[in-house]
Image (cartoon, rainbow, N blue to C red; front, side, top):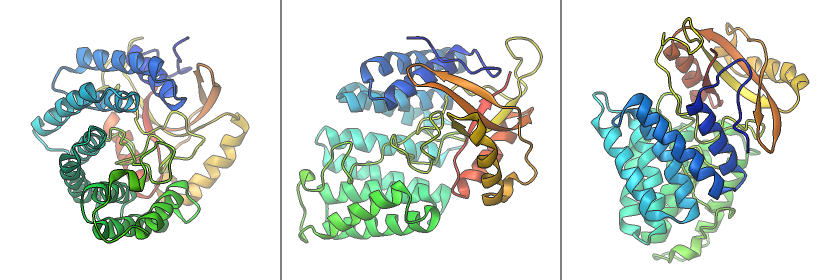
Length: 346
């Protein structure tokens, strides 16, 4: 299977490994996705070092795939390492910690350690609420996962209250037709039907495709997608194959020399569609929805070839000489309920 490359943007092996792994993951081919995500983590450690936040992103990605495959021991080990990296930074990143704690909670629950899983999800909610505030969709996702953990290991009444809060937040932020809103409303109704005493985990269901399935995290730090963005679409439009729960972990430093000479520049990818003709309409709609894009300059369309799925055309704005400028716009868009990712242009 060929490694996807982004036309006119990057031939970076780290980005390529990430894109390949995530695409295979989303298609359910875990046996093929895990080696690619493992390669991304190895390349990330070589490039950024064993204590870098960038590595923590890739460890989260790999751990989530391993969790889905059932390799819980390695998944837990990777997540505990990622959390140690998050905690060792000079400036603590609450979103990074929340991501890792959430994913660790899912692994611990799968291992049957409901008490530790509950503690991890509680800490994740506290961390993301500190970073995002009480009314952000990221906070809703954390509250939703804690609701499932409370239903499995604690008081269903607490679970019901958390689920109601999560559904209310996403309804206001994303609308009542959004898939995440429907998922949370369905789970809220299911939890309200539970008896007023602790119940077994099986009572709230935990199959990946179930309406009550937990929301795994994608790494978040700076360019991470919305905190607690699911492996299934959360705040991201379904037409964004590249802006999945785990966003690329290949974070180059601002003003780092490009492989082909000169300085790297960056762009913000707003979405990727199969039809290039649809990008004009999408651009107009996004500018009307988000005031942050009023002064943004649309860049020439580039495309990505994803093995087994075909070519997707990318809607980009920029360019930005320093990565932090692109990340700032992307962060503002996510705060407003949008989705995006930062990409390397050259």
